Length: 75
Image (cartoon, rainbow, N blue to C red):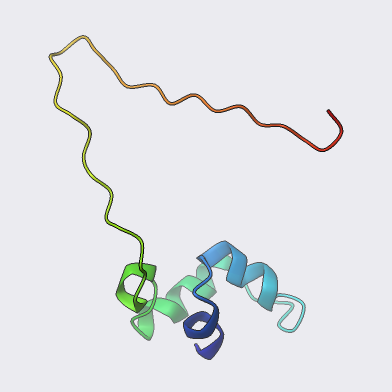
C-alpha cells in the first residue's frame, strides 16, 4: 500500500514493479488488495489532473474518432 501511495502509479505499472519481489502476484489479486484498502482509484489518492469532460452531444449518425501516430526510435 505504501508503494502505491508513494508512487501514484497505475495498477499495471504497480504490478510490473512489484512482481519481481512477489512472483505469484496477479493483476486481479493486486486490484482486490488496493480496493480493500480504498486506494484502487488514483483520483481518491489525490491526483492533480483535471477531471475529463464528456464529449459534446451530437445528433444520431455522427461519431467521434481519435487518431494517433506511434513512432519508434528506429524510424
